[in-house]
Length: 354
Image (cartoon, rainbow, N blue to C red; front, side):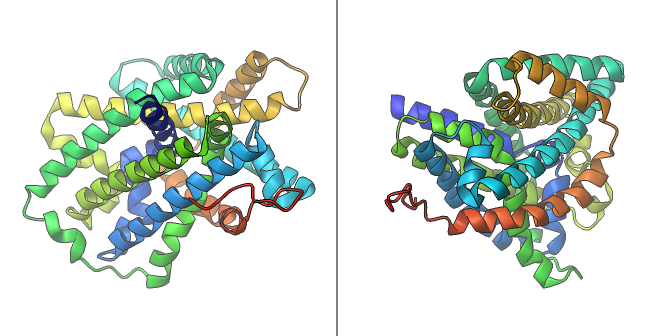
């Protein structure tokens, strides 16, 4: 039971790192999968295989080398010189995504909690700061609450969809989108999410007690992501193509269900923004702490202030334009991870394929 509990907490942390606000809103799944029509479910299954395989592999590699942050894993994959360049690029990407997520959190609290935008921003930053100082234990604890809530909400939406006449629309509807973009999507989506998830996956794998725990956590985490992807996709597909015009399509789906459900949805969106922020900024803080002569507390505070200062981007623009672009840039990282055989200096295997 202790072994299963450890693996489940790691799986929640993994899934919570990947399942962010773009996921909860439905916009991310719409842009990467649903808009491509009846074959999108197959693309989701392809992405799910990558999440299980390469998520597990990255954690196993991190444990073998005792990675302190994603920079150590990049050094293994690309060598010292290119590893530093890749880590620098990841730092910029993590800060950019975190800035927009922080802005989104302020907007959610402004709209649904009646707080001013600045107050919502400051409150979110304070909460993120407290969790970051708690380290991996804090991240696991937060995601042990957020991920089951997210799963329950999406299962509820899926159950409503199954009862509708359009439940099977995801198997039938056609689009004009090129087929090559559809089959590139699982790789772009996995590349984008897995690359940025290294902010948590590297220290998570390094902290694991054994490989068996990592393999079960990778399977459970990847499986959770797969099921939630399908829940959202089937719900969105039942309302295509009209649902594609909305910035927050899942919000449109649940809007007729009354204020209590809408409020719960707002809580879910905020929770996923929060989990993304915590994961990204925890990784950035670890990276900077290993290179700067300042305390983690001071670094975390400075990082949050920097994100707050630049959090002015639009949510839909980020998800529809910046996310696929980041995915294309991260594709090289994904390919390199897939090819890594994990050879140590003496030629022995650092990792066996899960």
